[in-house]
Length: 257
Image (cartoon, rainbow, N blue to C red; front, side, top):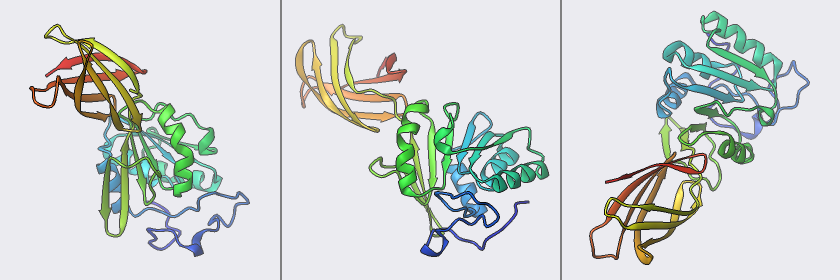
């Protein structure tokens, strides 16, 4: 059972911008506002969280997200929060729910923590804090990792999915591989394919060449480490389709379709 300290609040307003931890002298950038349990469940579903995942909750509060994931989905998790009172509450709730072996809580600044092992990251922070976290997320997390935020987006990094639920908005991003640059490979037809790609998050644009001649790049769709390309000699001839799988800024495999 979670300790309830507030009424049901799903969005921030000017009267809750002060630190709610009245017993703590710590000044928090984001006040603690508990997430409704139906929203927690929706966030877990949107991120498709399961036993194979490692879930980090940055600004974990009373730990309800991690505890729910551990209890219902056997998911290992780590919570990070600056407030020692929240950490104590979370640890007590984890023990009460008999999931203390699956979850850990760290008293620290979220910008100081290495969360590179995460496959899923949960946020319930202000947009300004999300934007500050964005470069850490893009540099630390492996391609294909999921980021889910309650109520606040990531600025110009547009979400891959969005869910509205009883007044709540939940955003989901899939961390993209770094694919910008020039890539060449030989196709099954013996021809040499070349693409020059530009990237802004998961949005890809660029140019293509086929045996040294300018070709038509119809589409380039990036999801995690998977890049699907459609290109052909021109806009009339049949298209060639390839899936390029990336990791560590390198092509690991190429599949012709």
